[in-house]
Image (tube, rainbow, N blue to C red; front, top):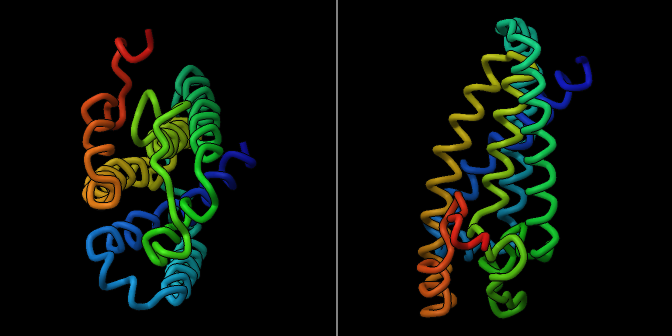
Amino acid sequence: MIFLDLFAIVYLILLAPIPLFFGLFQFRPDFFKRFGYWNYAVVLNIYMLTTIIVLTFLPLLTILRYPLPPAAKMIGAILILGGLIVSTIAGRHLSLATLIALPQIHPTRFASKLVTTGIYGFVRHPRYGGYWLIALGLALTTGFLVMWELFFWAIIGFSIMAYLEEKELQKRFGNAYKDYMTRVPAFLSKLSVLK
């Protein structure tokens, strides 16, 4: 159990800031393009601040937990594993440059292509779905109140990010992305896609 508690805290530090910065980045990409690679200095500072806050309040964050039955913990472990698998598969379809938003910062230097195959042929945002599964699984296995808060924050934050990201992708890829949006659902795969 100590491993899952530690994993939950690390996941909190890593996941919580993503919608904050990249959501703002997707909201005003032209503003952030002016700063180029300096955007990553902002990201690193946000991560350092998040780490300091989490570690400062760690005793409070970890004491606020409630016991769950073993069945809930088992379901949580399955969700964590499923989320890790989905996120890993989704990440393998994207380049590192795409994962860290370099095509948005330097579109001429880092050209990107529209990925519509593999897991992206079933859902448009599989990484976000994987993140949600992991956060929900950690909430169920650890019982930490803060993990439930992270789960709800991730649903709201990544949904907003997906919406803003899709506006940018429509500008970048035009009708090809609009067609992709009509064929493939955002988060939950249709049964007809699975046939």
